[in-house]
Length: 183
Image 1 (cartoon, rainbow, N blue to C red):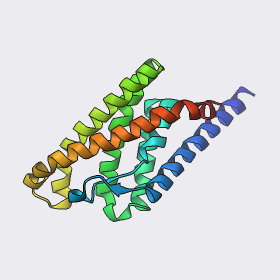
Image 2: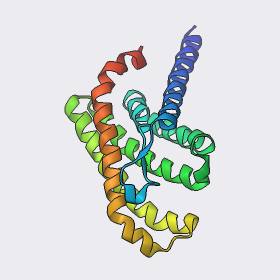
Image 3: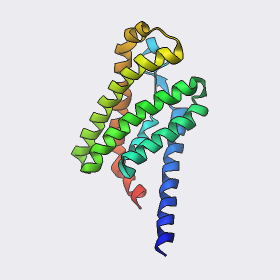
Image 4: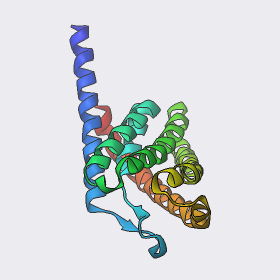
């Protein structure tokens, strides 16, 4: 009897996580726009919001799994033109964000902890993406590193704005949604 209950709980958890991935894909499909016209290829999308929510509900490893599955599905569907480069960059960005935020929030689940977690995740994502762009972009895009350095103010601004906005929206929505995820 206990094994059946554990199996049922795992199945429900996987279904909820799958739903969050699906919501992330739908969000990026319908909502994406450039933040800075000068670098229109850097587009804001709210796909990290359901991943953040899943991270707070299921922990940092759950969030990392959500980030990986979402990056893969998004990379072969709605963002297929960016190929493996897009998948890697998305996973690094969102993965770094949710692991840091998830670890901090899982230690003490409070509004204050959530704010600290979201802020730390935002800063972490920004730093990780600066280094990722310096290393990975020249390899995959054939762009000289000097061009990436010239774009660094946009890279920093983009990541701070995207992660910051998604953090604020997550903070507003999470408590309203968490009851459903914990049922």
